[in-house]
Length: 283
Image (cartoon, rainbow, N blue to C red; front, side):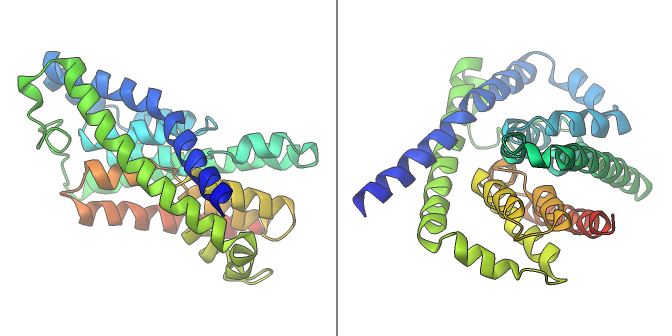
């Protein structure tokens, strides 16, 4: 029992430390921009239009969840559009790619997985930004408002402010990783198998919900169950599209005054993820 708890603690610590360099790097960048050229760069990034979604999709496809964390912070700082954020989330694959590379029999499916997720991410990102533009929804013209509202950043150095944000978020991520790790450890993979209802038409819907677990463990479990033949390729797509790693967790922490918006983003991820899963099941 004690050894299990130690393992859970170490896993949570390692998972959190993996994204620490990304987190600190992006906060250094954000603080530098805020102190030096917030208005100019903010406007330039927001004017990227569909190219933001394309770039976000490509970055999100890199097999780790660091970019989803970066995107969450940039969106909370109003430096990227909602479409770009969603494209990063949908393309994020966490541990799925290295796990499938380690199983040569699934090499063919790996490329399909990457191409489908990137394609869905680009389509969703461009559509979201286009719809918001047609609806006349304008992005907040005050970059960094959400991130820096409570930290009094303007009165501290760039390094001090970046460290303040990094420590605050990393402790929050560690706490959630610890709780989720304990739940996954004691609930077990068999429980997840039961929840996924093998060979059921509702499996992609359930996989999409499991993908929302803000931890790399979700992508590990879904990929392993696919390798074992428990879940279909379509369900794997659905779960990995909604699975943005700890990106969503960071979004809810840094964009906390826009909870309605955060849940809307989750809804968009779920709709596109499940739809992509069903389409993938047809081929």
